Structure formats: C-alpha cells, structure tokens
Image (cartoon, rainbow, N blue to C red; front, side, top):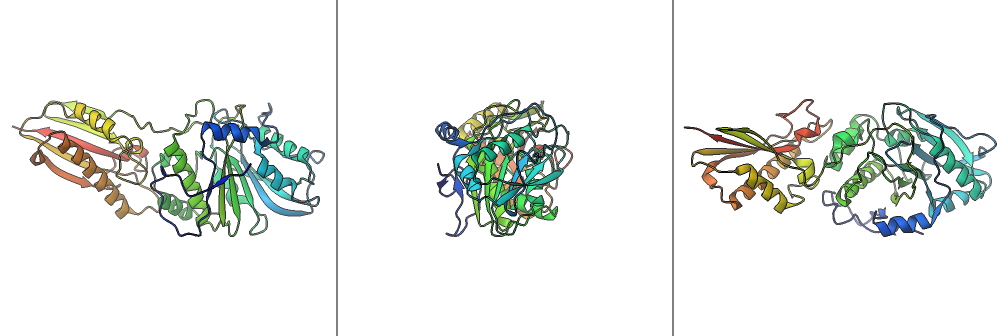
Length: 396
C-alpha cells in the first residue's frame, strides 16, 4: 500500500503557497484509511510492560550493520497514544536495505534525551517485528514531555539518506511544544522559533517519513483541520531543514502505551465565548485558536460564532460604546507586524458580525489589533493571549 501523492488538503488553508516542485504525500486520517493501513501494516504493534525510558536492542535480537543507510526515530510511548505498527511500505524499505546495510535507531526518552543504536535487517521481516517490539517497549517515565524534534536533531546517518519518524507528533516541550502552538501558530513563525532556538536539524536531501501514532487515553482526537495544521508545521520544519520529500502515514496501533507524557489541550471549535462583568462595563472574549482558522481571519463556524456573540451583546443602550481589540501570543522569532495585521483582521471580522446583528456602526468606537504587545494573561506566550476581546461600556 502506498501513500497518496497530492497537495495539502483543502482545510489546510493557512499554508503558504509553494512552487510546482513540491511533492508532499499524504494519507488522510479517515476511518477507511486507518482500516486499510491497519490491514497492510507490517510488524507487531504490541506494548511491553517495561517502563524503561530507553530500551536498546540486544545483540541477539538486532545485530549492528556494516553500513548505515538511514535513521529511525521514535519517541517514548505514553498512555495518551497507541502503540507503533510499521506500515508495509516502510517495512519493505527496511528489509530491502540488504544483508550488510541497516539504520541507526534514535530513541527519544520522555525527558528529551536521545540514545542511538545501529541495527541491521538483513532482508528479514522478523527483524522488523523485533524493532517494532523494542520501540513499543520504550515507555516514558520522565515528566519532561515528548520531543520528536530532538530525534531529528540527533540523527547522524549519511547526508541524503532517508529518515523514518514514529511519534504522535504532539511535542510537549521545546520549540515545537503543541501546548503553546495551540494549533494556530503560523508555520513560518514555528520555523522561525525552531531556527532561533538552534534546533533546526540538517535534513538536506533526505526523504522524511512520519508515521503518526493514533491518540489514546486522555489525549483528545484531533479534528481534520487540526491534523492538517499539525502536518503542515512538521512538513515546513522538515523542508526548511532541507528535506527533499515528506511522507505521512496514519499509524495503525491499537494498544495504548503505559508511559507518562501528558495530553495536549485541543481547542474546541465550538468553545463558548467568555463573558465577564455586568452593568456599565462588560467584556466578551473570543478564543482565537478555537474559533478562527489557523493564521487567517476566517472563522471556523461563522454562524455559531454569530449566535454566541448575540447572547453576549444582550440589550444595548444608545450610549453604549464598543471597543474591539485583537490579540496574539508572543513567539520567539515571530513577525510582530504580521501578528498585528492578523489580530486587526480578526477584530474587523468580529466587528462585521456585530453590524450584521444590528449593532449601529456609531456604537463601535474602535477596532484595533495589538499583536502581542498587550498580553491578556501571563506569560505573554500563553495561547490564552490569542483572542479577540469585545468591551461594552455604557456611560451617563
């Protein structure tokens, strides 16, 4: 079974355009695709009871190769993700390396540290099963969090050789921390932050294959939009690092892990607008990561947002003044002017909805975007600062 060759899905509307040489390949996470991938999966997706943060293979199970021809990266498992199952096309690539050629396995522990083990497949599918079992036995016991990016940064296989990454791609630490990105931080800003942190790996000329393990436990399943965003940032980082091609497979594991990596908060597109205050002054705060498409002023569900705003408006007096302010969170290496522009556009969209609901234009006294210059909560990087705040003030 092969991954489909196509451009980014239509729901990935935030992604910057690229030239015709772009060859990203996707397997969309629909139920049919998951079942198909499960049916053709190679290797055994079992979870061992070991809680070791780095389970290196023994010399009797996986022998070292004479030549390294690629890198396999895995992040330590947790109860919030399923076990790893190797797709048939990946297993075929591994067993096709030859008797004396193999890969380096880079295991990323729960605290972000890495260990590297060279291993050979020798054309034997049993060796694929052995590596799969070793990966699944590697469970996180550290509180630091998941860092697939650390694995990419640690590879030492020859330049241009392929890389296979097994992870949920929900990093919880470092510059790719999804709890801070909140599924709406623009991909260029994410790349800039990774670069500024000195964590952009060297992937020049490589094909990077991501096998995305399914969520489990307390980890909420991602929406199609959030999947598109997640894959877009990981692809953009890989391409910024020089990758020649990027491939995605949906994982097919069905057994939850036992490690301790925490769940990542997933914004709800139908999140309620937070209303506070009463009397002459009250505010309504729209959580941007939940309500707006990533990196755009377009609302995910405009009608639902309009209905929520209607409840927030309530009854207005002729003297009521309405100020609408768009905010963003601070990011290392981010483009502040772009943040101001986006926050202004989102504030303008909210103003348009208010006018459509009968709010007189003269009551809307200001519509501004302040980017990250006026944080609502601390620290300034907190995703709660990505919001549009509508303040109603009645005087006299």
